Length: 399
Image (cartoon, rainbow, N blue to C red):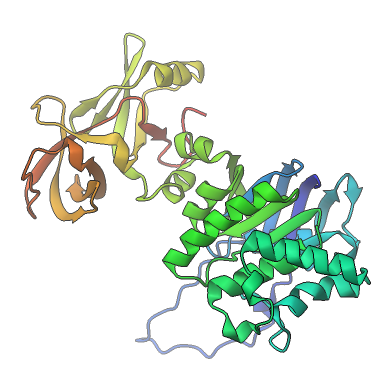
């Protein structure tokens, strides 16, 4: 039950690369190994997190998501007090906690690898943080029993962790965190060690859990499905920087750049090269000779920003592309793979030299419809769901 504010948070690690001994020169015929640094490197060191700003409301569920190495776990560890903050200010309930020890921040953390004590029973693991704080025996029992009931692990209280499955161990780890009734519950990729079926089950358990306990959640994952299903708001990170903050629907419907557009959504958004045209005050698209319309809402946003005709990257999600048998104004592609998914068919096409995926609901297909390898299909993009990006900066031209 707390608000959390991160203001201009920065984390810089010393650059140890410069201290490493130089390697011997390669021979002329040996290939040159190229290194590319995605994180910024300054005289101070490597910037792992740069100018992170976020205000988290009381009882809100915030998800930090992004590819490996983007700085999300480092940000979580700074909130926990396990990493020092190089610059910026961190507030929990309007209290500056930059220099406050982790044990005094009233937070709890669930780790990826469970971090249970193997020599203790489930009950003893859950009791341990309360015993450290010298809670009375009757209150310890009540809290442990309540948490075990919420998580469905009452029958495992006398077992050791080695006798439990991965999903059961993760429930115990979560139970050990919530018995403390922390102001903020931090979760660092808690489901990544579970198989797909267990992950789905545990996602549902976490959704139920947040409805039953009065705690602010900060959750880290690289899985965009977890982010979309769990978060009230999502923070999308790349190379130590925040790319976009918004509700799952906002980041799905209005990605601010091509990175967010490609990262959020499964399968990922299709990208085409095209031209933004303007005639008599109306915008349209030309993609390899195919003329695509733009909805009135998007017309208005482009006009308000006074966007000029220019080359663009056109984004369209697989579910926003429809097959069409008309001959005029259609795009086309060659079928490379056809995947039957039950309720839909996923068509993988080669369209204008780019990979393209279309999701076709089976209800929309004619009986015995087949998409043979090498066959040509025609399709069109939904005018209200195309996204226009600057091909150089990657920014969405509407926002």
